[in-house]
Length: 613
Image (tube, rainbow, N blue to C red; front, side):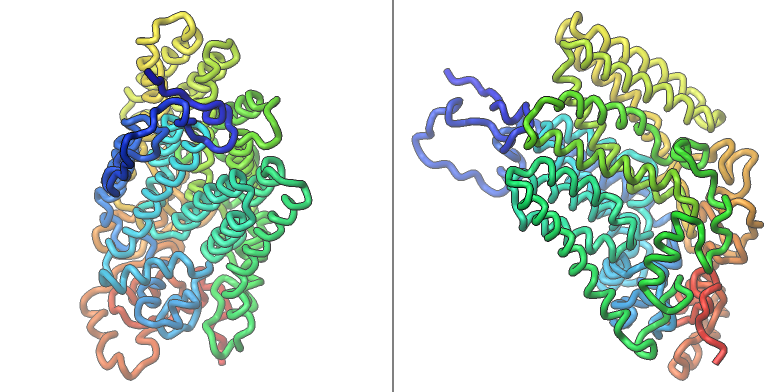
């Protein structure tokens, strides 16, 4: 009679994370080769039988949730939708990320996310579903990759918890149903984290080269923000890879070279081409992508010195400081589980403190912990343009650390330190959820009471877990998960129930003290800027956040049939059928006519394009 047991490596974080089946299963009398469908359903041999059905259920549920009411926001961010339309009709516009098919000016970001949407439009035509569905795919894929990465060292339950936390984080639900570059950026960084763990496990320069390639394309999505994860990834490899220090350093340098090459080819082409052969680089003041990268989209975001910005700097983007992620504007987007994630990160590093240098679990804490800490500090202290939806970049790290740390603390539940960590993390989450829900006290007021009561009860259960019967374990764990996820899940349900459009969007209900909440101005708009509303709106959109504020610079309006007819008449005689100040004003006309419209001054109307000559 053979029993099924886990090898030491599968619970201790060594390499590889597999069962030693040679001692637990007799040799088969005949070779067995399960079919592809059977392998897909059963998953890895070391997983329990329910693992793959649970994963597939999580992915299907995530896809269904993200697809629900998807097109209610119409064109979403018309600025990027118009650029995707331009790229779908002109290959030069596709390559450069131009706002219009006649290539007058680019958007103020690199074009990678536009490439995905433009190709989708080529396949499905110009419509809201074609523009937004690629981000849904990225969101579901991010959940799956995160599961696979966490499960490798911490087991199936940890992977499922991490995946569920990511899927239900309000800002992730918002951005994986929206057409800003943040969805692709987040997906590529999750893939890079997965590749980093594979590189550490295999001590492979090739895998670390893949990390560099993925981060290079993340740079081509949203420039320097992609590099906030680099310190954690590099540190984890330098600490844990099973080879000499010189080789570890060499592999990390090769990864850096891969970043330069995979991003630099496009940058080099754009910078070396004569200005007469390419569009103006939107967002820059000198028609230079390098200036855009290191200025307006780079160090200007840190210092607040962003030439050409409208309303940025000088505190207009909210008070900086370590409490920024928890304030009224941002807290409900991302912070629900940040206290627990930080606590579980510290606990996880403590639990792995005496393990060998190559311990895989500690490497995972360094990967995800470095991601969380560096990004959290950067977002908290940057003085330049900052929007709440940027925080989607924190969601995978928070989710991973919650799944990993909770699983490890559960393994130590018989020790006081393990049960106390679980209890404190659960109680902190319940109390903070109560605070966040209290900021929208008229919105489902019973939620905060339920979350607090169930969460504190689960925390008490963890304190006495070593004294209760095993049959009580599922009740305690289930109560903790329920209390931890109910708040963000409720915010997420509210988010998918409403269409979101414009340049500045937020998840969840209105919040007291936030812009647009009770006592505030328009939600998500920079403080100190008078808000108007452009006529009309995108098809089917409720235009939450920035509805045409700043004279229409934050959202597009829908042109009337008469305007579309007038602009379309004899359109072949013109390079541009119209010109409008600001990319959003131009985007509305362009999406209505599907013809090139020149955006004077770029997104803010402040770029020196076109020149008077």
